[in-house]
Amino acid sequence: MLGGYGADTQNWFAARLPHYDHRTLDIPLARLLAEMKTGDGALRCSSTLIPTPERRTYIAFARTVLLHLPISIIIRAKDENRFAPYLNAQGHVDIKELVKNTQLTSAVRIGRAYGSGIDKYINPYRHNHQVAQVADDTKLMRLLDLGRLDWALYFPSEAEYYRREQTPDLAIKALPIANNTTLLEATIGCADTPAGRKAVAEINAIIDAHPTMPWTEFYANWLGENDREWFNAARDQYIRAEHFETRLEYRPSSAQ
Picture 1 (cartoon, rainbow, N blue to C red):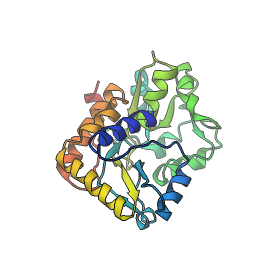
Picture 2 (cartoon, rainbow, N blue to C red):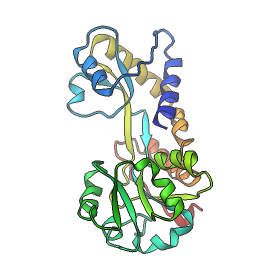
Picture 3 (cartoon, rainbow, N blue to C red):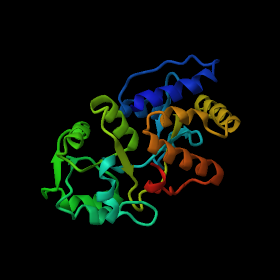
Picture 4 (tube, one colour):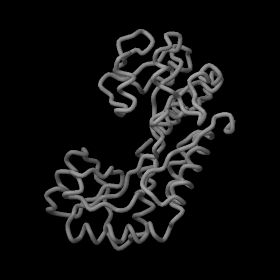
């Protein structure tokens, strides 16, 4: 999933930096960050990092590379009308009210954080029968297909990956969550050394030379048809808006 479009994106940029000796290392993120922090040895970079204030103290970041749709409510497409009472005028789900419905069941992974804007509504119901806690949320798509769940929380690309792998005949739909529609961003970061800053400058030049962000098609291909339309609209808005946060407008009735 992430490895698929993440690797494709990484290879796309690597092909445009042929003067570097590119080597892919399969190591834990914590180890990579530790090596980037010391700045010793060979140049270390990562293609899927989210900039944070702490990371910026030792990592040089390129401008935004990866764009992601946020965690959403995933339902069976045929059940869309059942969720209509919880949609606002923009087609976004009021999760605060949804979790109160004891007739619509879901499950969340033990210990997984879904973001403060979602957790504050989910957590009070984690021990209620309509929101079960599970140790492994990779199988929720199967439970959705069997009718044992009515909705699940996934990134749309996650949902599509598990749908293709486990339930290829299941038609699903992603409903955005109200106040959680900000397009997520990640980028390439290199150790904040002279070599790292030089590499990032070259990556930024590639980004500037391709304002339509063609590499994001790798991510779009990991989305279902409706979600791909949502992403393409959001990406176009992001590119035109030229600012950090992009709010998504999505109306399910117009994306059949």
